[in-house]
Length: 297
Length: 297
Image (cartoon, rainbow over all chains, first blue to last red; front, side):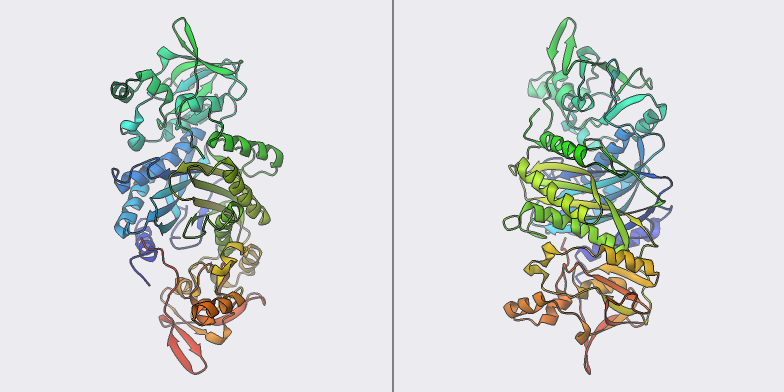
């Protein structure tokens, strides 16, 4: 058996699992066809997200630990968006031929670290090699402590809230962010959040996803602008608010609720009965068009 | 919003879900951050498998329905290998830029059809575009009707069994196979199967995975040889049994048990206390070395 390949990676994984195994989720099943996860109650929340070289990271710049960490955190951010707690993750990796066992191990270490910081474990995976760039896909399985908050529940008159400053994540935050798991779980626990998601494609593109059949009036002066948006604006010649509105990969929570469910949230506007989004700045009202990220297929 | 991109695909998916939704698993949550799956009991089985252009299929030859179908069936085969019933699937697709919405739809249709044939539903996914070949990753979530059968349980003296003829799958069966779900579930239900897996990397490479610390004596004359192995042997100049032993992607079940758990199985040998695998042919005994597929990293 060629010990330089997948088998060697699995052997390494199995040895790690022997050391670190504890708890009831996916215990000791490295090498099995499926992970067997005991589940405390009757609901499994599941999502999958990809992390692709040249799209979500640059393998020439970013170290494998950071790449796999981002892949895991993107999926964990879905848990935050639903207000559930991540429990188990499955990671698939298509590695460029010649990446080497060490690179595969470093990816795993990065994935494990990111999962561990948020109380989740990697219970399964698939590793293959091909003659193309690195592609990662991470499935998150979560457990709800309260009723999960979906994207469908916004009501006219709701406040629109975000959990933190936006824009300019490309300067580095798109790799280093941490998903808002604890906040998401607390928000779901309040029982008063009508709709919620995480901002991955940019506020102007993500907000309409909470507004099916509804509109929103957003107060330009209320949008929290990240220092990175200001720094980026100095380079691009665009305004900082442009970056806050349209940049992607903030991974902050975006939600609607009748009143502020927690006082750490920032209210940026109001859901309206009419369709469309409006950006209000003093007496000026402009149409707010989605400009964020769309994956062309 | 650019209706030619991911959003258009999600809209199409949402419309399909409105028509087809039924049951309690992942209902009506297209576009949400996670699928919410009601789960009848306390165990979730989970696995992930990739399907990569140039490795598992050839996008120049195979139609998208067949490609996605294979991706789904590879994951479903993990359910067969554990003896559990597949319930919910999540599909991630990295599409070459310019594939087009129609191609994405055809992938989904193929995935849905393969899942549906085995009682499972696609409850979530992620679609992205990049400047590289098609990469699919499918997570399967399964529910055990009996105690799942793992790879760790073989005992010296066990018979080694396979569920069908082997070899030559590259002639087409690697795309058209159907996972042995019903057989796997029935086998788990007998309670007498000690260890089980599906043959994806070839008998000679997969069997050792059931034999940690043990060996096996395989009877060359007992190995069921697929007609494809004979046809392929005529082209390659190798023997048909070589192809039956070492070719991958049969997706038949491989198991060990004290006696034949069901009479449809074919007994090909015996687990031995000593390490290593031996191929017996009449009075001749040769070392059986693993030659199957290893993903170099």
